[in-house]
Image 1: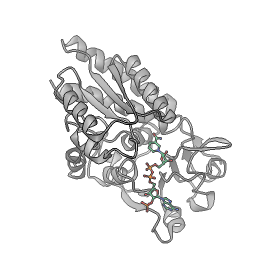
Image 2: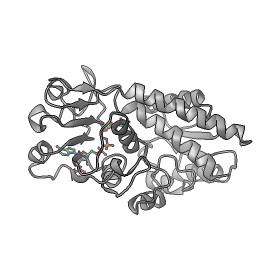
Image 3: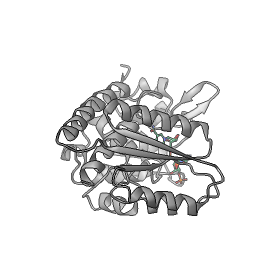
Image 4: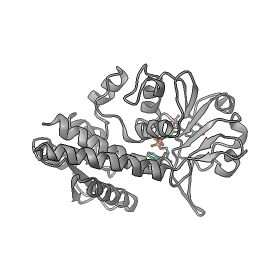
Length: 291
Ligand code: NDP
């Protein structure tokens, strides 16, 4: 039987409606609206689209936003000075530096300079450390969005075997940490998984994948995960966004995988919409923390 396609857009919209109410409650309690400042360096077209989407989502939720656009020739020092200014600006709740930065900029130094209390992307070492100790402050947007997707699709993770393909600092690694913890902000049944974190040096990847109850693909290779790599009834979460001649394609061969899986996220319209939504959630949290 073909899998159910998980509607990430609907899940995202539902959560955004809840966040909008929480923002309204926060403002009604006498606080200024949360404010997200996005910093965009250079003219990367995809980054411009992402930043505009984030601004629009903020507006819908009642969150103030501002975009600071900087020239591609900006130096690391100039960016560090801007971040320092934003760190000390009491009207700013959250700071987002859109990646990738131009190659001449020391991205790590810039991300490390963002105040850990305004780090809505959850990239700061302090926030990564807190997550790894099981006492998260901010949760990284894409992985936490996936936990929301699973929960709202009636899928628990406790006791399940989960294969994550890709070990990036943005997706795979924090995803593995989150699912292997004893607890989650969404409940203990949304953690406590047995996680295998695969990467380009993994041996028997297909075999590991085929034994998993849940497969999360974050590789960046079009249709890498094929139907024969899946256990019948597995849940498949496709994080990949690959631009091909056929349009946007995920890391999973969707059509074939849908014949084997029980539930599957599409690309686009699966994980992507949740990433922005969790950014809103983190911006509200930052405003509450910075009171
Ligand atoms: P990275 O390029 O940072 O990491 C890719 C990972 O995949 C690496 O760990 C790499 O292994 C692994 N990998 C590459 N080739 C293979 C292979 N043949 N076999 C097994 N593992 C392999 O990517 P990101 O995590 O940043 O992004 C992954 C995908 O997700 C991209 O398509 C990106 O566009 C998308 N994405 C989507 C988001 C959303 O909101 N939906 C948000 C963020 C990313 P190794 O470490 O050994 O090199």
